[in-house]
Length: 365
Ligand code: ADP
Image 1: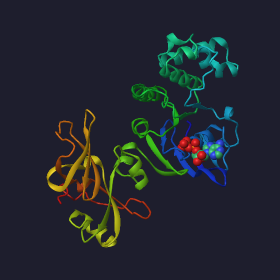
Image 2: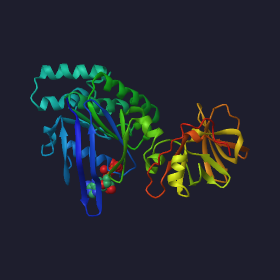
Image 3: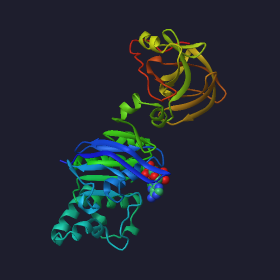
Image 4: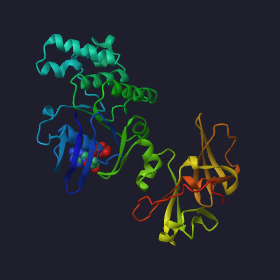
C-alpha cells in the first residue's frame, strides 16, 4: 500500500518567487493523478519535492502513511521519468534499464530476468542491445519508463513525459500508459500542461494555478462542474464562452433581450447582482430562434466543426455536427441551452449554485 499525502506543502525560492503555496493533496494507493496547469504554476516543483530533489520550505510528504520528508531521494522508493528521459548515452537499453538494480547490488542473473520481464511489458525486447542514439523518440520514452518500472517503486513521478513526441505518437502513448497502469497499478503523479493528456489519462485531475490547487476531481466532473472561472477557462477546448450577466426576478439576463430562466431560490438571494455566465461550445447550437450571429470562421475537425461568430454579446464559439454547411460571412441564429449554463461570481471567480435541472427546453431568446 502506498498512498501519497502532501500536507501543507510550501516552497518558496525567495521573496519574489513562490512556487508551491500550502498545497495539500491526498493520492490513494494505485491512483493515477494528473496535475495540469499553465507554465510556471508550480507543477514541476511539486513533483521535485516529492522526489526529494528539491527541499520544501515547510510541509510534509507521506508515502504509505510514513513521513519521507527528511529522506534522501534514493530512500523514498519513488521513480521519476523526466521530459528529456535522461538516458545514459553510452549504455545499451538493457544496461540503462537495469542500472538502478545493479547499483543496488542485485545479482546479474536476477537483473537480466527483471529487465527482460519489463522489456516484454513495454514491447522493447528486440531493442535491448541498442544505444539510446539508435532509438526513435517513442522508443526512448519506453526505455525511460522501463528504467522507472524495473524498480517497482511505491510512486511514479512523470514530468511531461510525452511533450517531446510528435502528435500521433503522443496519442498512442497516452493509451499505452493507461494499459501499463492497468497491468502494473502504481500510485502516480503525472505533470502536464496539456489538458487533453490530463482528461484522457487521469483517475483524478488536479488543476493548479499560482502554486495552489484550484480543483481536484475526476476528469468529467471538472469539465461539467468547474469550481471557478480559472478552471472553466483552462479546461475545455475551445474554451467556455463567458458573458457578463445580471440576475433578475427568476431569470439571468445576458443583455436586456436575452434571458435565461433560473431557479427562484437563486434569484431571491442574488437579485440585481452581476454575474458571469458560461456556456460550453456544445451548449450553443443553430436554431430558428435565438440571437443573430455572423460567422467569422469555420474550423472543420473531421468529427465536428467549430465556428466562431460575432454577436451582440461578443464573440461566441460553438461546436456543431460535421455535416453542418456553413461558410465565413453567413448570417445564422444561435440558441443557448440554459440547462447547461454555468454561473460564476465575477469578483471571487467561484461557481454559483445554479439548479437548472427543472428546465425542460433550451433557452429561447
Ligand atoms: P511549472 O512546472 O508549472 O511550469 P515550476 O514548478 O517549474 O512550474 O515553477 C514554479 C515557479 O517557481 C515559477 O514561477 C518558476 O519561475 C519558479 N522556479 C522554479 N524553479 C526555480 C528555481 N530553481 N529558482 C527560482 N525560481 C524557480
